[in-house]
Length: 343
Image 1 (cartoon, rainbow, N blue to C red):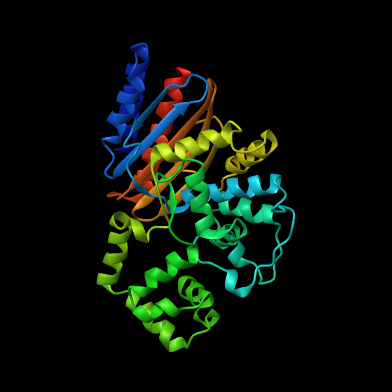
Image 2 (image 1 turned 180 degrees about the vertical axis):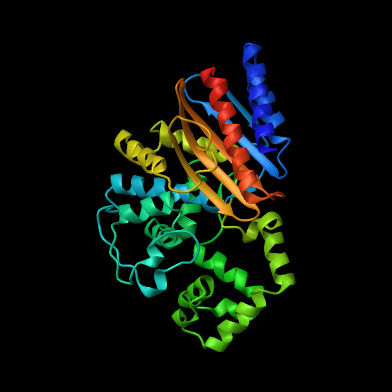
């Protein structure tokens, strides 16, 4: 079935190319492909050399997942240029700094001392949640990030709601309202399954753990992922993220040197191999965001032979196997490359 879908997609692309790529061809292509995805699917595409663009649900609000981490990276590089943040300074990861979920820093011993640059990089390339809350703090926290988004014209399309710690803690409150008082160590203990890491009585943590397994709690968590924007890590639109990626790529937010470094970081991405890069043979710099089984996002720049193309591709409310949804993203990315490069 998957091979048939790929063949159908390629035939669609070939037909589009044979037609001479009349105005609106890319728009029709994207509308056709996204209409077949069993999810709320939004995309924004812009060729940075020609200016050609197309979009589907470009101004709809989506659950950002980890895509909303990108503004913190930009802020860190801007602050470094203003000498208000030293990217080469070392920070110490304490016991209360560890976060569950994605990333690698939580697997290292307490006391590890990466540089701020390392922390920012891990926030992007492994979507490291420990690094994320440390980076958020370094640039001034949630209020400062939202103020930056407002001042630079990205709000209300982009908004950060909370830290990683707050998002994780709020999920446990569904199982027990007293979970609102959980320490950072408790939240990590519950997320990792290592209850001995916590500071609260083990029996209390076990009761929350049991509560999280209740079907009604799991159902409510899934509902929130799809339908409760105030509980999300952040809110974004395909066009809003695309505009931010374009400004980063073209050096409108930082010096050329900082823009080049951020571009390299995006190209070092370790996640999302089944998304934008999956079926193409040109470089991609991107940032993923995901909350299986419902959210799969990927945004960045595809460096086609005809020039860089910004792609902001967001899937919320996925209603099929997660890997199938990821493959669909890769298939659409292939069609975008073929459209612009004429293959």
